[in-house]
Image (cartoon, rainbow over all chains, first blue to last red; front, side):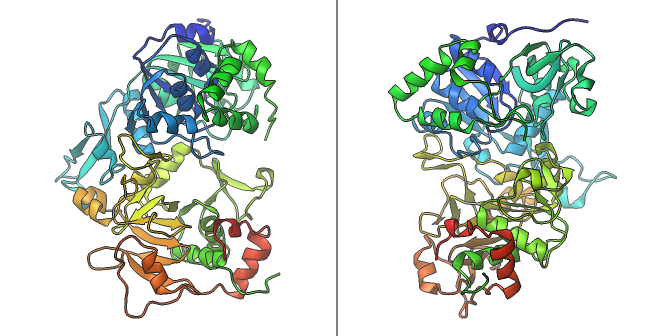
Amino acid sequence: MADKRTTPEEMVAELRSGMTVGFGGWGSRRKPMAVVRAICRSDLRDLTVVSYGGPDVGLLCAAGKVRRVVCGFVTLDSIVLDPHWRAARQGGRVALTELDEGMFFAGLQAAAWRVPFLPTRAGLGSDVLVVNPELRTVRSPYTDGPFADPADAGAEFVAAPALRLDAAVVHANRADTAGNAQFLGPDRFFDELFLGAAARRFVTAERVVANGALAEEGPLGAVTVHRLLTDAVAETPGGAHFTACPPDYDRDEAFQREYAASAADPDAWAAFRRRYLDVDEDGYRAAVGEPTGGPR
Amino acid sequence: MSDGAPSRAEVCAVACAEVWRHAGEVMVSPFGTIPSLGARLAKLTFSPDLSLTDGDAALVVGAPPLGTAPGDLVREAAMPYRSVFDVVWSGRRHVMMMASQIDRTGNQNLSAIGDWARPRVQLVGVRGAPGNSVNHPTSYWVPDHSPRSFVEKVDVVSGVGYHRAAAAGPGATRYHDVRAVVSNLGVFDFETPDRVMRVRSVHPGVRLDEVVAATGFELVVADDVPTTRLPSDEELALLREVLDPAATRDKEVRG
């Protein structure tokens, strides 16, 4: 059995400027922030970031790593609008492919299933199809015969395009050395689809246990990422900080406010960057203290 | 505690509740304090089969008061985001979203103000509004009715209105149903021959000309516009004593 353990730095060393990279989680929840921070420290640039956007998007934009974002939203949940993302958009510094969040789901699923698109109603009639003129619609071929639904005969649907990723990173509560990963919180989000859509698949976790030991950590049904979806795994305690990672820890709201406030001016951002990003993960944890949110 | 005339916030909460009166067994997804109260009120009174979420990843039993601690909620089923899309696309949902802008034909904007390519104000994003609006009943809540929120044409069509759905064809219109818009001034719908916004009722204490002046486009106004109904004594008691004793509703709508 291959031991897939590695480090966030080694994961990031496999990335190249210009790549399309997907990040798991949702909003300011269970984001793979240890890898996001490692990307901020790297010399990567011009990334296309694919995400149910949270501070992964804002931080990477502020650090100058992003050429394009593919998303349906960017939010910090308890702070609705991420000021770093607003600044990047209002300053014209990043390109955007704005999709309906369900269309985004269909796109990840299409990539994971190796089909070029999946049909959906989501997006029809909206400006999603106007601001992204490269999106296409498709007409139902079932106009007669046993599979025809008369109400949809000839109707057009959005062909949600496969969101193929060069790499994906997700953060789990637990993983094992073989790359199985377990989600102990209430929502696994779309993490296994991000991995399924990607050529290189990276998992970080609060704790990495021996292969076969995940059943002792929680229900086997919570192991929704199996090792066929994973190329490398890294143990990153506090690896989702400052986003929520229940039941291990809640969102660090005070730190999130500090992150948001650092968008106020270049000096504030430089100070934030010096203190929290120009240091390695050990230095980061020393600067922020251990996550103290505790079980919910 | 239930003494005193109904506040505007309480009228708005009941107006929101009315949106779900005949909804049956569907997931309600209310955004904002007043719609959250309205959904709970509807469930406790005339729409007991409504299904509410815990705001995270589960369906809850009953209609817990606002601000109930997560540990005190009783959950009946998991509702992670992947399942939410199953519900959205099955049609078994009636969402009430907020709208930074809404226009005459029911288009809604959550994405950006100004030119989308380089917005003057970046908002949260289209989120699920495009998909919601063509898959299941969709209503809107606007707590600050003004010519800035009720606009002739939204800057970025997120939720899809009647004319845009019609132009997109039967794939868009089959399940499209923008049901109602509730604001701090009145209730509005699109039950007009050409599917443009009409005044369904004006809240007590609001004059029709105030509504017209606060709207950035021409509303359809009947000769005799009704007044939004007042909360019943039972509804007032539920709002004041059970669902929102801390009166958080007054922070969203004053007066």
